[in-house]
Image 1 (cartoon, rainbow, N blue to C red):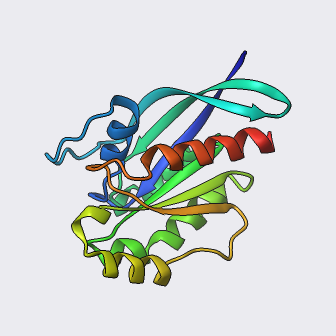
Image 2 (cartoon, rainbow, N blue to C red):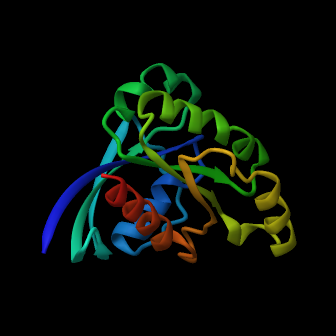
Length: 177
């Protein structure tokens, strides 16, 4: 079984749950205390992918860059984004303005990594009524960009779609390599 390493960036406004999604995925934990990321924090997790490029199994070590979400950060963001094969763009279902800025984050990531792939996470789905989740999900879909491969309604608290979004992004990155 072979192994490769890929850089993935978590991008989104402050407080949308980027760090919580990483903790749920990497450590299988959730903590509702808010900790603001300063600069960047890098986490690692190995994902085993099956049936990729005529191999039975492939291990992909994800280097997940948790990038701070403050707007003053935009000037240095390209430096952190360089060399990423993919990104998880995160918005917060309970704060509509964060969903409205997702296309801006997509554009920023692709301006640095035009061949990168993106998965969008509408996080904190557990905090919003199901009907509202569906309505917002349909309203803010980003289907028209070929580099945005999937959008998920996620919850770092419950874990819904967290593993799936990282696996989907990993498969796409490896298949395209």
